[in-house]
Structure formats: C-alpha cells, structure tokens
Length: 374
Image (tube, rainbow, N blue to C red; front, side, top):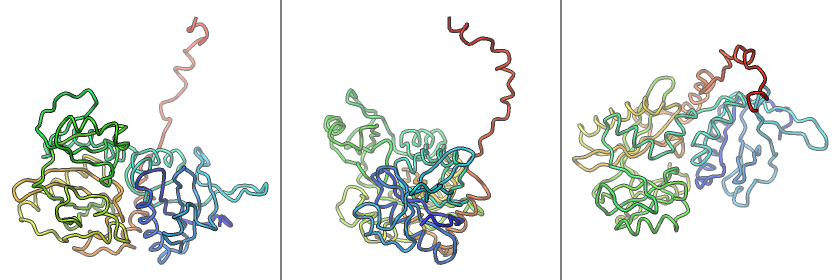
C-alpha cells in the first residue's frame, strides 16, 4: 500500500487510549467522506501498542476487532528535517516517505488528545488539524481547565484534587469522581461520601494519574455546543444529549457511543429547547473559551444546566465524529468541514520551531566544561 507514496492528505485515528474504538469510528467516517471528494487520501491506523499502519480507504469497523486489518502496511513516524511517515522498506528495499502534507486527527483521548501526538507531529514537520500542544494539554487536564475557567470569571462547579490522604472538602456530597486526564465519561463515578471516594482511588484504574472531585448535582443536565475556527469562528446549534436510561446518574459512555455510528447515532434534542437568555449566556461562554483554550479546528464545549443555572463543564478538543452532527443551523456538509480542517492545517500550522537567537555567543564564552565540573 506504500507503492508510489503519493498522497496529499490523510486521516490518523486509533492510538493507545481507552477511546481507541471511538477513534476508529470517527476516523473511518472522515476517511470515507474524504475518499469521495479527494483522489489522494490515506488512512493511518495507530494501534493500541503504538504502531502505525496504512489501511484501505474502504475498510470497515469490524476489520479492527482482531487488531490490524488484513492487507495493511506498517509505516513509521520519523522526526527531524526529513520527518514524516515512511514505509515500503521490506526485503532490503529502501523506505520511502509517504507524501502527506496534512492530517485530519481523529485521535480521541490519551496521547492523541493530550498534546503528545501533536508534539511529535510538530517535530516531524507534519501539518495537522485540531488543537496545538498547549491547547490539547489544557483541554485534557480537568483540574487545569477548571482553574482557567474560574480565573476567567465563568461559572463552573467547585473542584478539588482527591488523594488518599484527603480528609475534608470545601463542598458537601454526594460527589462525582473524574479522571484528571481523560474523557468520554470513562472512569467517572458517583459516590455518596468522602470515605467511599477515597476507597475508589485504588479500585478505579482510570483515577491512577489523578482524580478531580466535584459535587454531584442530580438536578443538572447536559448541554453542548461545537465551535470551529476556520475559515472564521463559527458556533453550532446547542444540543441537549439524552440518556438512554431515564434514571441514569450521568451521560455515560453507552449514551454517547453505543449506537453504531459513534456520536452521530446518540440520542439528542437538537436544537435544545432552552430559554433564550440561557442560550445567549452559553454562546457567550463558548466564545470566551475558544480564546482561553486556543481552540483550533473543531471542538465541543460541554455545560451542565438546569432552568436557572449554567456551568462550564469541560472542552473536548477532538470531539466524537468531529461534531459534524451539530452544525445544522445553517447546515454544514461533512465534506466542507473536513476540507476546512485540512486548509487550516496547511495555512495555519499549529507550531513552527525556530533557533533564532542561538548565535553561539554563550558557547564562545563558556570556557572548559571539565574545569567547571571540578
């Protein structure tokens, strides 16, 4: 599949993350749509163990149930001046660079959405859609994001970091526990008291890297809005996601994704039926957050609300199905959304490294290093 190595754009999906399966669905949706409108496009699958493979553009989701789909070709990501994806080096053949000049990232969660992948692609000189390193890292860290929101004067529920030694909290229970670095409701739990919350730290592996604890408010429901940054800032319709089980405590992983097409098939009220004043407040908050969080590409901002209150909950910098289903007023074709993501990747790179200022002056005056160590 590396023969010729002549493509212009690609879709990168998968990765070593609990959201691996959802990333595959989003990636295949984008790959299939781009294949209809662009002649030179490729799909790059990032495995659970960190390897990369070129896959067929018409591959189906079930082909990934046993790992890498049959007929796929392994490629490697190289950093540096000649960085990029390389493949086709079997049988002592010379590896060739895959001529991809821009990537749509469909890499939900983990290293695909926390800045790790973005940093590697910056070092490889590959243009990509979605958040920069800094934007990705902020969006994935619930504690840091909450602090930024509060500092900006936006309304959010109080948060604290939970540790085994935590003896008190500045708010009463019941509580909701969230992995500090994670998304898609994976690992989230509702508990009645602090003792139970501390006990869950050892039992819930998703909390191992940190746990954010908040008051659990049964009276609040979810509201969501998408934003995209190119060619100009645009907000979607407001959505109220619906829970598949009426008495469910939270909007969980099953509500969001187990419907056949990822977020596209999740139950929802769209546009959400909410008061005009609350809609205006939500839109203004979303606009402020695009600046605070350096939104790039398409992102989804999640809120918690009742008829009187509105709280910023979190930002999803690479949303499920790239939030294509939310742009209904006015309608936005998925093909146009993808083309704009690729255009932004090419025309407004997330980062350019520079050695300007490293003129050798310090080195010339340094003297003998060995003498300084003596």
